[in-house]
Amino acid sequence: MSEFEHRFIETNGIRLHVAEAGRGPLVLLLHGFPECWYSWRHQLSALADAGFHVVAPDQRGYARSERPAAAEDYTMAHLTGDVIGLIDALGEEKAAVVGHDWGAPVAWHTALFRPDRVRGVAGLSVPHAPRGSVPPLTAMRAAFGESFYMNYFQQPGRADEELAADPADAFRRLLVGLSGDADQVRPMLVPPGKEFTDLWPWPETLPHWLTEHDLETYVAEYAEAGFTGGLNWYRNLNRNWELTAAWKGARIAVPALFVGGDRDPVLAGRTGEAIEATLRAAVPGLTRSVLLPGGGHWLQQERPAEVNAALLQFLQALP
Image (tube, rainbow, N blue to C red; front, side, top):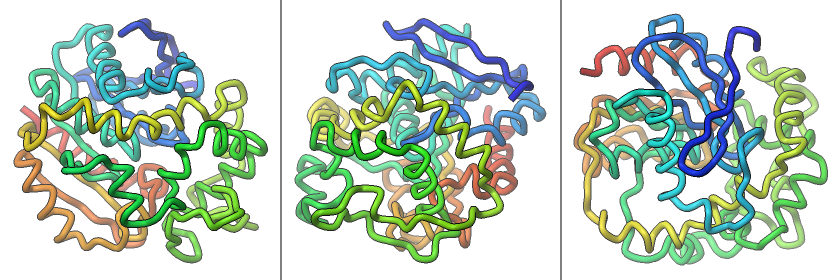
């Protein structure tokens, strides 16, 4: 998109591609899996027009950014370090940090680890989850079984090869299947003998918010990168749990916002009241929690006007 500037930034020992727009207080937009800077196309313009300097990186392992080969180079320490490194490289003392999907835990943990560098934090689709008493893969295996997608992703090369075999098919199934326009909200369990993308049927038509051009853009951004970098984030779930022991019981005190959709499988049918109550216990800085009726997992793409309005209300009120 011509209105966005694209460049590479060397920071924290890694080369990151960023798309940016506007001038003013810094806002970082952190995407999830399997996405890239393009997921924030609607927010880059809207926030820049409202007087913010908006930067959407391809996070490490994704699209045009550098992709370390070792799985252990994708811990939460590395990911939050990249965020702080970007703030430094952009010449700022502080930033507002907004994350979606996997980008949300990175945003939440950046605020938890370095509240001195974060003006405010917003999470889309994934609320902050305090450190549990057992390793997360153990907890998820007990709750959902070995077929739960995060456990499935632990097998080196398997999901990588499945997704890379036909990226156009994978993006079409994932983006429609996890959206509020899906025919049903499906559990994220890979049936025996099936592949990850078999969780969702191939959609004959696209919802209004998703175009063939959008799908072609994602495929092009992943043409060289593949999916292993993003999948390596999942392969550090237990390692992250080990590394964050010192923060057990710590709470996020900076101003915070959460926005989710009530048809998002990640939220597993939780009510807005339940999500907010859980959040307030761990995020005393929470200013607002929003659950959009009919919203799916890709909120900033599905419902850009409502997401932009919530973000602007939050960002413009930050001290």
